[in-house]
Amino acid sequence: MIDVLYFAWLRERIGLPKERVQTSAATVADLVEELKAREERYAVAFADLAAVRVALDQELAEFDAPLAGVREVAFFPPMTGG
Image (cartoon, rainbow, N blue to C red; front, side, top):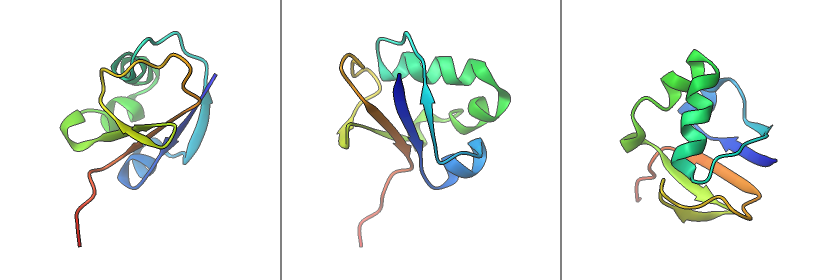
């Protein structure tokens, strides 16, 4: 089980701030594909991965990062400086 967190417009599109997900995904990209296959709202939220960032256990990561041993995955839009 992995805790998956959604922030900003991802949260709005999916309709949840957080959920526990049972997954067999090896990487973040695999997890995204599993989520997109669940329901249309996930497919809409993850339609443009260039507009999504990910953190694994609160550390920025890439979509090809492995999920082995990860407890929390957070998805959020890119942050701007200021």
